[in-house]
Image 1: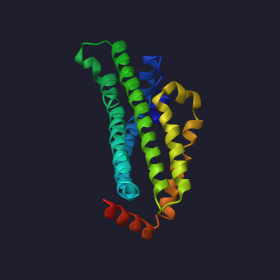
Image 2: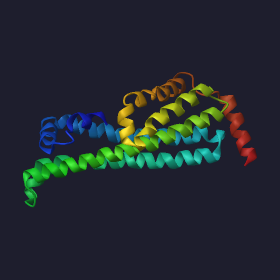
Image 3: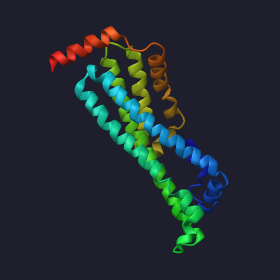
Image 4: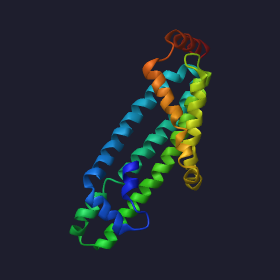
Length: 207
């Protein structure tokens, strides 16, 4: 997300094209990292559904719904970037548009990508809030992690209204430390397996 932001000049298609063409390897790296992030998110969100389902089946299903929307939007934001280099480097071969028109078309794709990315962050934030809620209900993780995760989600959710998100930046994204705290806890300490099994059995019995 940060690499395209460094190259795009939102009000100048010519400068944007020059930045991308002079940093083609960096632009390609951004795309590669973006698609790896999509794959990572698919795995992470699937894992979290299984992990937190014992804390609430209905909430876990809603969480999965927002996960699907978020990953789809994240992938869509990247797909808008895929044709950029083709447009800027080989678009003149098609003969229908001149150089300035091609540069403007590339900038339009990039701005659409940015809009899709903002909506992705908003839905990702709602997913984080639901994760926080499920952690708070769970017996196998500290509740403070759920509170921190929900706060991180609220920070991301500000991108539902980009002017507000831009006004609060970087403080809204700084709340993402809650997401980092959860990952560090899971990687170092993990969940309490006995309590996870107890809650999973209780949920199965109740259903």
